[in-house]
Amino acid sequence: MMSSVIPSTVRRLVVACGILAGLGAGIAHAADTLEKVRDNSSVRIGYANETPFAYTALDGSVTGESPEIVKKVFEKMGVTTINPVLTEWGSLIPGLRASRFDLIAAGMYITPERCKQVLFTDPHYQLPDTLLTKTGNPKNLHSYEDIAKSGAKVAIMAGTVNLGYARGAGITDGQILQVPDTTAQLQAVRAGRADAAVGTQLTMKGLADKGGDSVEAIAEFKDDPAHTGYGALAFRPEDKALRDAVNAELKQWIGSEEHLATVAPFGFDQSNITDKTAAELCGQ
Image (cartoon, rainbow, N blue to C red):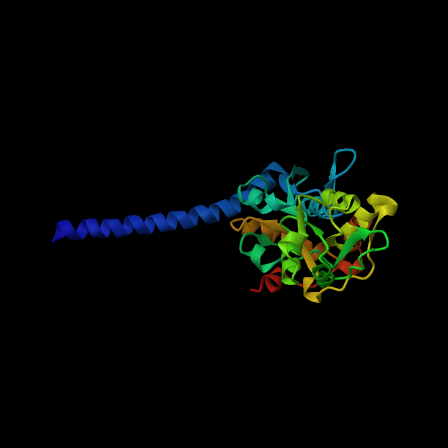
């Protein structure tokens, strides 16, 4: 009797210890990332070139609304060195989960689908979308539905929420030109490979400024209010301690004079501040 009972008991103890060890390792990793960032006084941010959210300036430095917020917030946490890692938009979440960087600072919208993969801070801005077209908007496009009905082609940055919005409005995949970044969106419209490009209002206005007299960001874009974007910083699911520490600093700082002065050069102001929370936007 004892020879059969003891091995069974031992097996249960081994399994239980293994589960506890795994849980302990996960908790330790979450705490370790925050401690590592503080101990090294440095943090790695993943970004994709998209003005005005996060981009490489002419002098080679990385700036934009999100990196500048990160600099200020982590400085308040005693972290002085920001190490940027450039990647394509569609590789931001995979890169984060593969530990290529510690957080995403790219103006990423909070969506329920993304919430299954990453942890978001509460949003630090809200922003509607618009279209970039040839000057004069020759095809008279003012909504996703207009694009669907007219058969026009639209350039959309791969990995963005706009792909889902476009398909939901009846735009076929044959009408969609997926591109890696906003520069490619501008080039597609200027070259006539797309009749329009869609993205955030500030991004499309920035592209119009770069594109000169040949393109414009339309003033009236009819869109579902539910499509308003809420941008935030994103972290690995196991890095809740780091996310929570950053979120606490953001809550105290967003809306302050220093915050508004920090984001003003990128076109953001008081109207972009929101009281929405990540939990609400994630549907939790």
